Image (cartoon, rainbow, N blue to C red):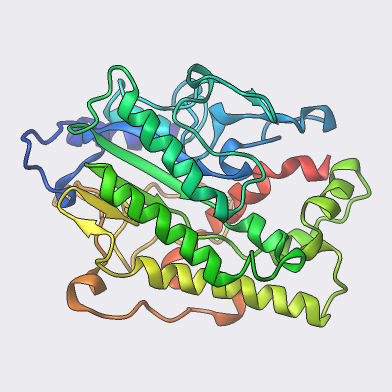
Length: 343
C-alpha cells in the first residue's frame, strides 16, 4: 500500500491547485476542482455484502467502501475514487460515510450521494437520476450552479441476469433508451458535471462460482438466467451474445460528442483513449498511472468525437470486452462486491 500512497500523495502536491474562474471549461477540470462526488447504479455500487464474513452480512450495503464513492477513512484505509478525490479536495461533498441495510430507508447522512439501489435495473435509472438532481439542487452547502460534480454510473448487469424473464423489457434497445434518457436529464439540468459511465463486464465468469455454500445457492435465484442454463446451450449462447451487444451499444452511445459541452461531459477518464492501463495479474503491485504534468486534467472527450470517427473494434471479440473498456480491474470489483456468493 505504501507505493500507492506515496505516488498519489506526490501527485496531489503537484496538481492540487484548482482552476479558478466561472468560465472554466470541462476539458480543464482537475481532481482538485471536484467539489461533489455521486454515484448511481445497483448492488455493485451499494456494495452489498462487500465486507460480509458470513451469510448474515448479505443484507448489509457497505456503501462506505464502494469502489466509486466509499468515504471510509482515507486512501490508507480503502482505495476508492472518493478517497482519491479527497487527497486533492479534502472537503469534497457526497462520499458515503456509513453502511446501510438493504430494504430500509437511509438518510443522506449515511448514504452520502450514493443513491444507487440494490437490485435495480436500467429502467430504474431515470428515477435514480431524478432523485439525484433534486437532492443536489436542495442540498445545503452545495453550490449547484458553481460546483464541479463527478458522477459514476454502473448499471445493467441485473438486466442480463433477468433477460430470460422478459426479453422485451430487458432488451438492448431498452438498456440504451433508459441510459440515454438519464444522461439527457443530467446534461439538460445539471451544470458543471462529469459523468463517468462504467462499462458492464462479461457476466459468464460468474458461472464458475460452484461451491455448495448458501451464497452460491442464492446466486441461482438472483441471476438465474445466467446460472441455470446448461453449458453450450442455445439459451446461454444467446445471453452471452446479448451481454456483448450491451457493451457494444453502450460504447457507441458514449463514443461521440453527443453528451459533451463546455460544462458537461460523459465518459470522463484520467487516462487518454487507447492508453488505458491493462491489468493481467493481481499478484503483482499495479503501477499507478497519474495524469501527466503537461495535461493534469480529466480526459473527457474521445479523440474520435473531434474527428467524427467510429469507436474502435473489439480487441478480442470472444472476450466480450470493448477495447476502451477492457478493465479487468472492474471484473475484480464485480467479484469482490459479490464475494458473499462464495460464503
